Length: 266
Ligand SMILES: [Zn+2]
Image (cartoon, rainbow, N blue to C red; front, side, top):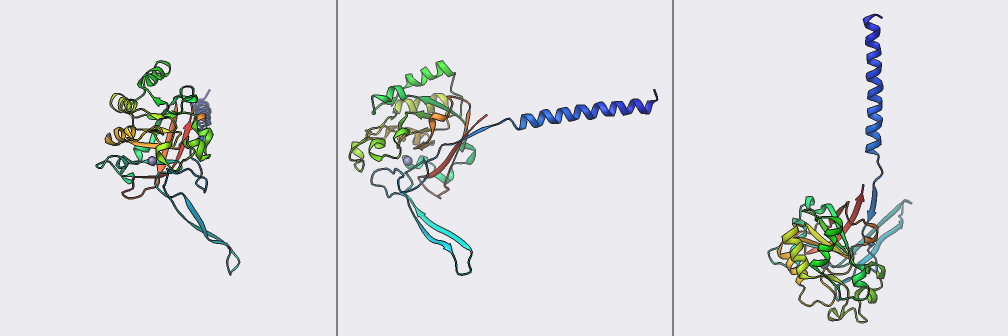
């Protein structure tokens, strides 16, 4: 066999191996990823905190113009704390960061989901206990640093029925609300012992509805961390493994605002 033909065979082998490696890489790159939207739409049904101005939207121009082509343009206004939204640390801590001061690096990362539907089912005043967190860790492992902790109470099934969701026949009166939330102790534990990057919940507030001192908010805000409230579709997330991205409207100096949240599950 002449040296040149041997070289050709080697070239052919290299070519075939390269082709196989490319195919393998392309298969890995295209492994399907599930993307889940964790955001409620903003409309006239959107639940806002009692006595907060609701979401408002109007069509300014909506139709064919004089020259015959379509043109649509509207205007909206809303309070910061309603619908699926983010609470910036300044919401409950005077020196805390405003919504625009939270870097995007903190708004994306791994999330864990603690399911307390059983505890909350017969008790709308249920508060997450440190023992619930420890029981979760016994089953799923230590909560990794910089996790987003999502509390799954099951309250999303009542959205957007204001009376049931806020747990009161007088939902305009914030002293009459009943829905589950975080205890201050559980937030303190997650912040100081687990180094989390934020929390979220499928109710209107991280504090339970009956709270009047908002201790969960205050402990979290003092730690300069954020909260996500009225998070949708938590039933679609696994206890571990989801990467959650939560991008709030960047209001300079704002105490929070509407947020688009989605999870990717590899
Ligand atoms: Zn809020």
